[in-house]
Length: 75
Image 1 (cartoon, rainbow, N blue to C red):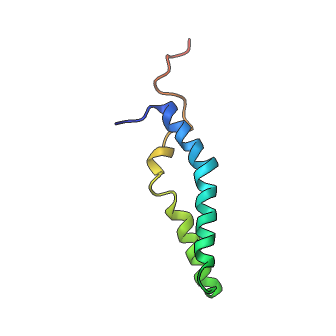
Image 2 (tube, rainbow, N blue to C red; image 1 turned 180 degrees about the vertical axis):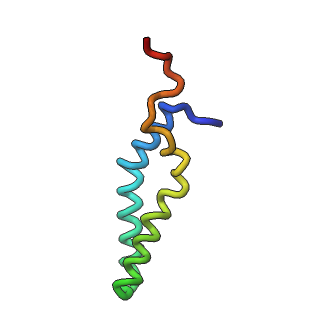
């Protein structure tokens, strides 16, 4: 099932406004459960987690900054 441009745009907004902050809170709390690793390892973990959230959502964000392709042409 292919999402329409408007639906993708709404889901992308939801992902950025709601899901991403929740992901950050969960990631920080999970990392906090363990003893603090050395600085470079901790930095690597956070960089990895920062990239990891975007991979499954890459297709969702593709093309949403472009004009609606399904909209009627303007004259």
